[in-house]
Length: 441
Ligand SMILES: Nc1nc2c(ncn2[C@@H]2O[C@H](COP(=O)(O)OP(=O)(O)OP(=O)(O)O)[C@@H](O)[C@H]2O)c(=O)[nH]1
Ligand SMILES: *[C@@H]1O[C@H](CO)[C@@H](O)[C@H](O)[C@H]1NC(C)=O
Ligand SMILES: *[C@@H]1O[C@H](CO)[C@@H](O)[C@H](O)[C@H]1NC(C)=O
Ligand SMILES: CC(=O)N[C@H]1CO[C@H](CO)[C@@H](O)[C@@H]1O
Ligand SMILES: [Mg+2]
Image 1 (cartoon, rainbow, N blue to C red):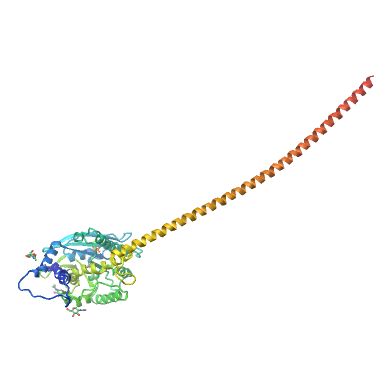
Image 2 (cartoon, rainbow, N blue to C red):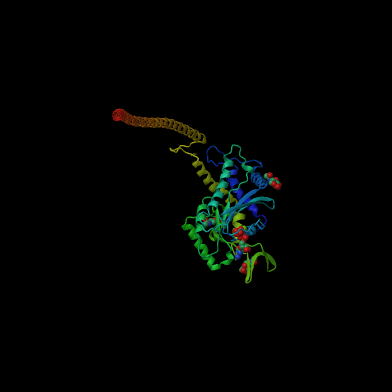
């Protein structure tokens, strides 16, 4: 890698300086007069001031690597940045996809770069791959959300905020030579409005030259026919336009990763050694690794950062604010300020509150009425039951009284009969006694 490759970022910063940094508005003939200076003033050092300030602040860049387990993500990152990142081999038995982020501080000459490498863990290893993309989408949205929250604070500190938004997403395609998997297509489709996708064909040393050519064409046509938007190297800027055409034509880059040094000729180069030969990582006739490094790091790092902020984050922010009910224009297309929206929302809220209160009051009255009628019903019921019981009781009483009367009658007739019988007995006794006496006489 050329020594000053990170400095290329600075050159691209200039174009923004020219357009926005100075805050100049070319306003033809509208009260602005061009003047010439009689001598040196010093504001021609503004770009240098910006460069110095940028160097002081340092830069930050976040890469997301999506690819199945063991496809060579960590090896490629190590090769790209010429270092040894922390590499944990992941198992093939993760129950779901996870994301692992690690931040590093790198320095090249006097430029400091805070690099975050995010790796998917267990991507494509589940039996059911239906929801494999969701953790990735959630991760990207979370980073956008925390930036938005910082931006919406009253006391913002965006200058020293650690921006964790994903600037570039390397999507590792397995070198099957056939076509994309549906998981690849679905995932890229879900991500293409959220992040700059740079597809790469991993382990490109395992695919033959003619097959690789066909594979690249197939992949691009599949991406187009499925409407997947991948990151295009910018063509509107003269500083990078020279490399544009050829580079966009080489997509997706076929890459080989290796940190192993092999001696070729009289030099040590990064390569993969095989029984039949050597694949040189940094040889352009062997693979597109150099092209990827050139485009990702030397030429377009700043564009990737800018696109993330102006396109992807802007879209997230817009959707989020619209979801919250903020709009730039009212239904008649007149512009409304945040203040007006707030007032309108507040009014709406108060009206809604009043409505809810009324509703609740009505409901309360309704409920009381219902309860009252329910109680009345119950009372009537009880009354009815009571009447019935009373009637039953009266009936029973009458029946018992009747029985008693009958019994009394029985008793009195029995008494009469008994008295008659006693009388009869007494009479017969006296009659017998007379006879006996008579007989004895
Ligand atoms: N043939 C070939 N093998 C490669 C290439 N890059 C990496 N490998 C090998 O692939 C294996 C896995 O590489 P890693 O870089 O650990 O893969 P990974 O995607 O980081 O794996 P996890 O982090 O475990 O998901 C290692 O044995 C590497 O040597 C390549 O470009 N070509
Ligand atoms: C920028 O920094 C360099 C060295 O660090 C210094 O020579 C130069 O004067 C600085 N320029 C400005 C505009 O501050
Ligand atoms: C790149 O590879 C080609 C083909 O293998 C070889 O002829 C050439 O010398 C290599 N270039 C370098 C710089 O090693
Ligand atoms: C495809 C494309 O638009 N390529 C452009 C690349 O940049 C040059 C200028 O250097 C243009 O002429 C090409 O049209
Ligand atoms: Mg790894």
